[in-house]
Length: 319
Image (cartoon, rainbow, N blue to C red; front, top):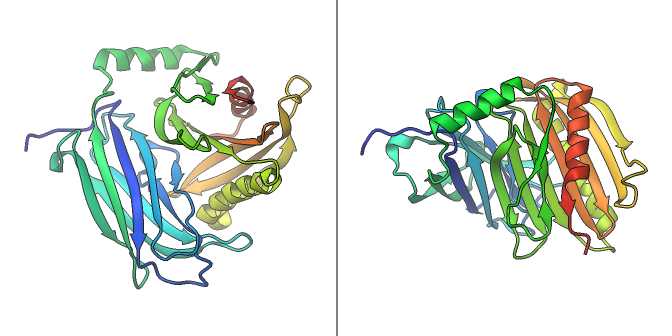
């Protein structure tokens, strides 16, 4: 096989298919899998979460995630998978973890591979995944240099709306950010997770969309807010610090869009590196919930303003 390497714009497309023979805990059977890029030098600890499967030790998730390569210095792509049993009020029970490394010299680009991974730290459990190294979006060297030069000299923040062919949502993001990964279930018009990264600063932005109904929207809002904060706290241990909590960020110009819009800021640690996390959870008037989260290497008011602008500039279908 010819020598090859990852290049900026390349993508890893990952399907977390299912797990089998998970170890029983207390088990309420609400199992999910976290996918974490296992390399703190190339990101701000971006995490992906599958859907939660109920009442089974053999969950089938079929969750697809897309990760973009943002540097030509990435020799291998490392992933950490962690499986948990979800609990509403206490720390989620650990059901195993496994690390997996994708080496470009060992695979062929644009070809799918299946892999079965044995979960570590537990008595039983395997994880089934499928992955592909996609080179169809590779960025040329000239275009890459032009993008980084523009970001380095831009002292103001400009935004652009991205047409991702999603009928119910059009995100608005700072022009220095590029799409990093996505998990979209457009067919159900219910669930969406988009992530973006600034190749220069390594700051990352994630956007979560959840369509619910009037009867369950308040509970879903609380769970979306609570679960995200708990995930950050569990991963940071004693180094976690809450900087602000559930601040109402609705303004006069946006109150007609939101039933609620709250912002939380905290200091977290991912892979031993300090990260500042600001996130806004919005309850729109058509029972759509959105979570906008910014992961950055420093805490400043400008980052909070940027995230607020992402929230108010992004277009949501209110039908």
